[in-house]
Image (cartoon, rainbow, N blue to C red; front, side, top):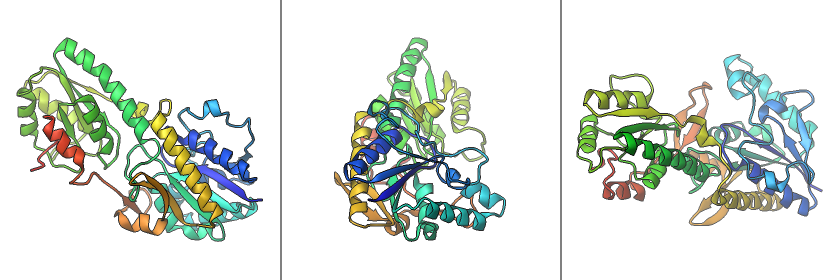
Length: 359
C-alpha cells in the first residue's frame, strides 16, 4: 500500500480543494493512504509535523468547489524558505524538511504550487531524495512554463470579469473611466484575458511597451465616454512611483479625462471554482496519480495541445526565463510571460483595444 502526502504552497487560488479531493478519491480507489500536510513546508518544520489523514468526511465533495486550501498554504512569520534565508537558517530548514518527510514514511509527495514553489522544489530536490515528487501547477498568474493551463487561472479571470462587469454599469451612469489594477505580478495573462472578456478600452501589461500620450489619445477618440482601462500590477511608468493604477489615473486626470481607480485585490484569488478549473483539477490529479503508479519522480503535470501529461521539472525550470528570486538570495525561479505572438494581442488590436505599442 502506497502512502502519499499532499501539500499546497504559495499564493492562494480557487481549485486547490478540488484537486485535493480528486487526488484523495483516486488514491483511495487504488488502495493508497493519503496524508495531508498542513501549512505546506511550514507544517513540516514543526515537531511532530502537522498532518491529517484523509477519510471520506475530511473534505466532502460538495465543499471541494470552495476557494482557499483545506490544507492551508503557510503562515506569516513561520519558518519557510524565505524566512530561513532571511535568518541564515537555510541549512537547518532543509534538514528539518528532510527529517519530517522521512518520519512520515511517505512513498510520494504531491506538491501543488506556483512557479516559485516548483522552482524551489527543483533547486532543492535533494530534500525529496528517495521519494516520488509530483508537482501540480496552480496560479492565477499563468506564469508557469511548459503548460497551457494552470489551476485557478480560469476562476480568477471569471472573478475579475464579474468585478469589471459591475464597474462598467456605474461607469456608464457617470460618464467616467475606471482604471482597474489586476494581479499577475510580472505576467500580463490575467489582465489580457479579462480585458478581452469585458471589452476593455485599454489593457496595459508588463510585456508590451505603451505610450501614455497614445493611451490618452485612444481614450479621447473612443466612441464612448466611459469604460475600463485594465492595468496589470507589473507595469512601470518611467519617472513615476506608486501603484500602477494610481500613476495612470493621475495622467488621465491631468489630460482632463474623468476617472476613478478600482482595486479588485484578493477577490481575484477567490470565488467558487469554475467548471473549467474543476475539470482541469480532475485531469491533473488523475495525471499525478498515474505518474505515481508509473514510478515517475521530479515531474510536473501539464496541459499541452489538450493533452494532460507529465513533463520533467528540469525541463520546466530550464524552459522559462530564469530570474533571481526577490526574496531568497541565490535562488532562481523560472517564469513565463505573454508571448509576442499570443493571438489575444492581435485580437485586442482588432477589437479596437489599446494594448500598447505592438507594431
